Amino acid sequence: MGPERRRELQLFQRHTAIKFRELERLEQAFTHRSWANESGSALGNNERLEFLGDSVLGLVVAEYLHEELPDQPEGELARIKSFVVSEASLSEISRQLRVDNYILIGRGEEYSGGRSKKTILADTLEAIIGAYYLDSGYAAARRFVQRLLVPEIDKVREDRHAKDYKTLLQEHVQKRMKTYPHYRVVQKTGPDHDRTFQIEVRINERTYGPGRGKNKKEAEQDAARVAWTSIQKEGARGPGQRHERGARSQG
Image (tube, rainbow, N blue to C red; front, side, top):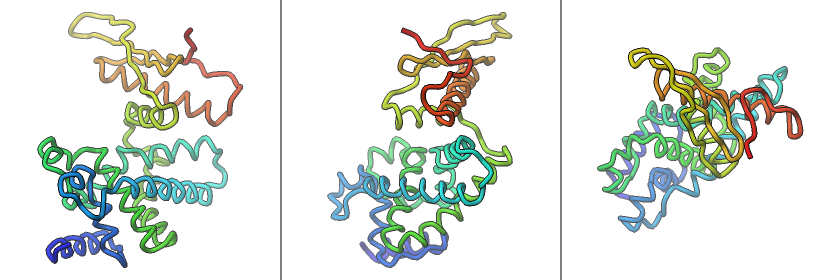
């Protein structure tokens, strides 16, 4: 690592009010696999740190919600957590921290706008959290995560947060079910200048909806909202209980 890069990482530390004992850990957290592949970086890429940081992040948020909201049921805690640790939330925090200025990224990803991609921004933030945990321990990582995420928790509790249900649903389904939601237009009504779309979303053998909107994007968001809300409630009730209206099985 050259002196100029060290100065850049020190600037990031001042901006985020954290301090690494081993600056190489932070450097690895910023190293996207595209850069590692092109440069042959001895540090490797940040994917293992991202994996670790995802778990540290989840634990810190879950611990905070458990301690600070003792009267809330598990389902409500899960709902809040799902918004707070979503790709949309983490990528926005990354932008606020100017993470995009420091990512080491390959030429192909750079040309395709990778530095501003939500996935890369969110993953890099998780890698930073994982690196900071290894470098400075859980207590320091917890303070860092809480400083970043408690304002987001407050937004959710006050219903001031952005609700991108399509992204939330896709993240949940990919992670828990290893598949993707599939959207289908089931009905279009009204004249061309005042069209209403009805769209269903299918996940494995379950179909949710329909969602409604004045265009396909709105209707898909509404269908995703129905599906995501239903899945969250089912998780809170536990298996073997009746499904909410709006979801049905198909053979």
